[in-house]
Amino acid sequence: MNVADSTFSIDYRVLGNPDDQFFILVDGVAVVSVTTGGQYWVRSSEIPLSAGEHSIEFVSESVLSDGHEKVYIDNFIITPL
Image (cartoon, rainbow, N blue to C red):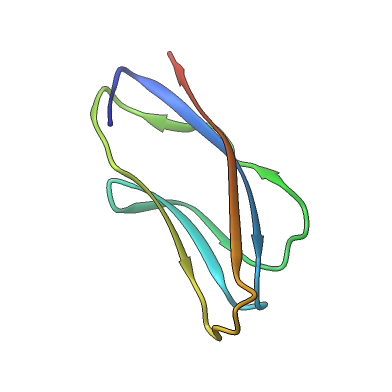
């Protein structure tokens, strides 16, 4: 995605085994890292994006895949500076 100087935030909820992890990557660098276990929605802090082209990825890593791993994502908001 190509953006002007901005920030983004996102709501997420991660369900799974205690050692599972969820990452938000910007240009391949983890800017959010969460170990599962939370039953509640969480709002990320505002994550800065400099002007230009960026890739944003959402990655879930499961230690034990038993079919209960879930990541919910909502309210992805980009705010120009």
